[in-house]
Length: 311
Image 1 (spheres, rainbow, N blue to C red):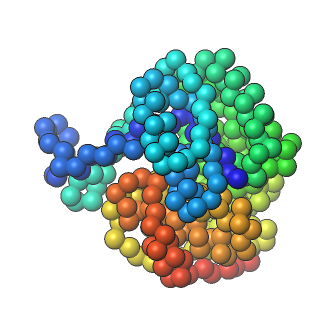
Image 2 (cartoon, one colour):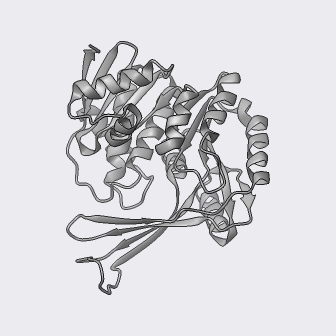
Image 3 (spheres, rainbow, N blue to C red):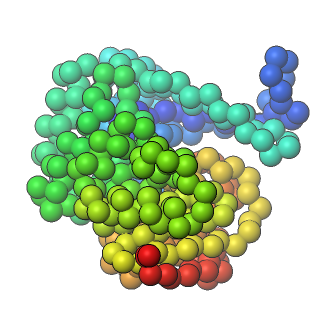
């Protein structure tokens, strides 16, 4: 079973606005609300693909109740720590020129009791899970080294931990030696401290992370695909072109593909195909954290992988 951790979930509010630009008044042509936050997106894709999963993290207020109700409708198992604050909203405005504008709330403040309650709960349930996926930003009040501590607990229980975050939380989390990390190119640049301009430099940066005890490093490159690194080898992943509708949640869907592949014990190249296909298939859907299984299968067949020795 897979456990997903979303410490800063949200209601994702998606508006389709024709000709959107700053400083004017518009009427939305389409509105959609979904339970969101990176880890919840991961959860939904795992559920769509038929694997057992449970979601946890922090929820509060009417927004938190809405997210729990929606997860219940999807028959997704969940157990969140309740907080006094109101769970945040994240707004995505999509225009007809394919541009996207996002407004992300910071989220509520988490008190020390909430954090201690979460650690205790995490320790109590971790033996029920094989894989832990922690995704997204940390809410106010949660220390930047929180993911590192969660990784340490997972390793103590011999569990595989997938980390997908950014900034200081990613930097400190890497020190804990998670099983898999998925930075994008800009995040990798911040970690290694220099500008990356070619594939050799991506490989050099990834090797820096592998040397810290991480088993798999995946560098997402948007619609160009991804590069993955494990052991002495690099893998260049090229996905087919698709009609992208909404790219939000594609990275999360890729993480879901990795978690499922690890659970199913797929070989490495099949793992890369499924993860890349999940990320690409999500971009074809209006809803974040959603994939069509037929699209996933087709994209897997059409994805190209080139294996190379790391220099």
